[in-house]
Image 1: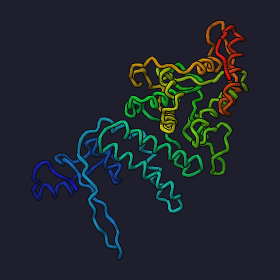
Image 2: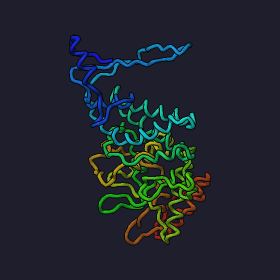
Image 3: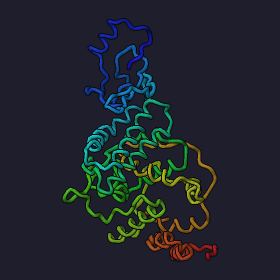
Image 4: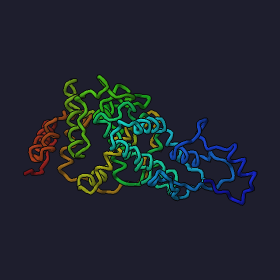
Length: 371
């Protein structure tokens, strides 16, 4: 129900109900999320300052009761346009969730996503609200990985300004940006070559459709991240990249971040100390892969001065042995997939010894003792 800024006469009310409408572009808003988008973009009749939400609950005997759900104020939301990136996907998900054969868990996940979008558009504009949207998207994709609602397709493309919307100045967001932008390389136009999205979901080239056969997801060997254990997923992703590089005669990690997105040493130090929320980090990274990287610039990235923190010495030994490029012109250290496999298997001493051997082969000698 609408609320006016000033008392409304009967002709005003009659005109509003007879002519006015809430709309998005040329379409009428007929869902709560659509209504919130229309309100946040001022796509409603002038003079209305807010809308009162009511829910209709069905009681015994099929009689209904109107329950007050809250107040939605009419105001311009500077980031409301970002939801347009998900609009088509949201529509497909809603249609699928209303199917009588849809699994209950998918219906619940779709509701959580719709609620997250509604909250971001009608409540306080904080990074946590926008993060909740992307993390709810990941919940949907996790269900799609099991074969549910694959006809809705994956999310397509996100504008780079999503990064500013979710940026809470945390190391998780910055590292998620580094991982989400990771690819074998980038073209001159800024498009990623072989991004990491295909390690979570079986995708056709271009990541616009799922790989399917007989209306089911194909069993793609490139999909190695299950979403159950962040550490195992990260290890499996890097190991898979090294294996694929080896089949092409390249002993490289083939993981390069977009310009301005590379991981910082102080953030890596926090990651290795075990103080970060890995579920949040990987969840955001899975959605950042959908960013339109050809529209990306360093100005879109988080801005915060780095600290002097650095990772432990052991990491400083392992990292040069797993680079996607030569260390220097005369020091080319081939990557070894055994290092990642041993680290994942809690055999750090053996992994470090292999890394030290690789470094010694190019003339780098270290005095650090392992064991």
